[in-house]
Amino acid sequence: MIKAFIKHENLKKSLEELQSDDLTDEMIDRFVNELKHSNLIMAADIGESEIRMALVKIEGKDYGFLFTDMDEFRKTIPDGECGSHYYDFNAYQAVVEDSMVDGFIINPSSIGFVLKKELILAVDDLPDHDFTAEEVYSASELKHLKDSMDNADLENFISDSANIGKYEELFEKMSKSTMLTLMLSNEDLTGYSENGIISLEKTGPIGFLYLDEIGGEYATVYTSEEKIDNVTTSLNKYSQIVNFSQMTNFILNDDMDGIIINPNSEHVLLTRDVLLEYSSLLEETCNDTRLNTAIFHMFLIGGEA
Image 1 (spheres, helix red, strand yellow):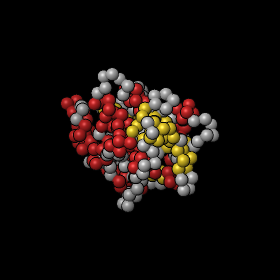
Image 2 (cartoon, rainbow, N blue to C red):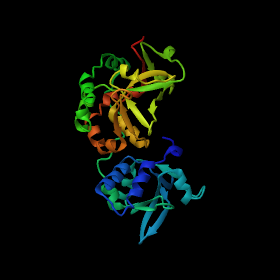
Image 3 (cartoon, one colour):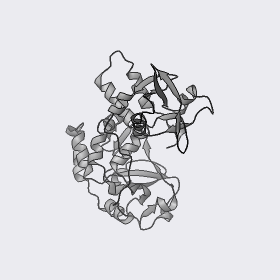
Image 4 (tube, rainbow, N blue to C red):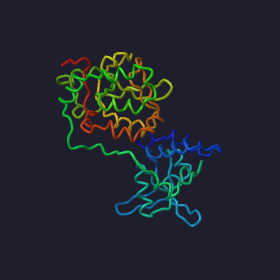
């Protein structure tokens, strides 16, 4: 993640909701879930053996500064006065657990939300960002999975309108399925392939993720390469197997709006709120760590060698 690209637009909307006179449990849950998947920017100078945070005293207690983006950072911290660093939320829990501060203030020059130690430590079920695994599929094993995939049960489920909103059943079926995403390239990458496999470990990042940007910014997943054919683009298309839990983490951390299953076909929309609500369940059911190396391989569509 590039620091300049961190925006947290959804977290900012949630902070604004908390100012409502009609505060609901749903608003509070949304805020806590956004915090779980945040990468807030901290004002601090970090050396080899010490951390010196910018601090402000409130009622005799020390509070650090957190920011949703670099624009907010610059409103409070003059150029060169203090460094900027972003971390997962569990890092800020560790900071208050070590009694380095009594809490944080988010965007002090605008909303100035006080995040007290008690609330920080009460946030649990944090997402697991460690996607290392001892046992992973090889490139040829991944291609065999792709070539032999049969998601008929999942396709039948999502084709039935009576199943709309049955997310627990949906994710259980997805956990037993092989899901693809669509990668694009400006150039024909056939020459980079061996037995239909393009190794990004060898070529570097020569493909990019297709995003559906109608009404928001959505990643897409597919139950077959035939479903990928429904996407119209002038660019070159390639398939890639996904660890769906890993993709969900990516979507939420990058402040995107959700995921669409089979766009231009069944078009099952999983909004950001749905992914936030079920993120812990997704880690339990859809996190096949053997697929963690899948992001390093793309496939020619149609099984070409």
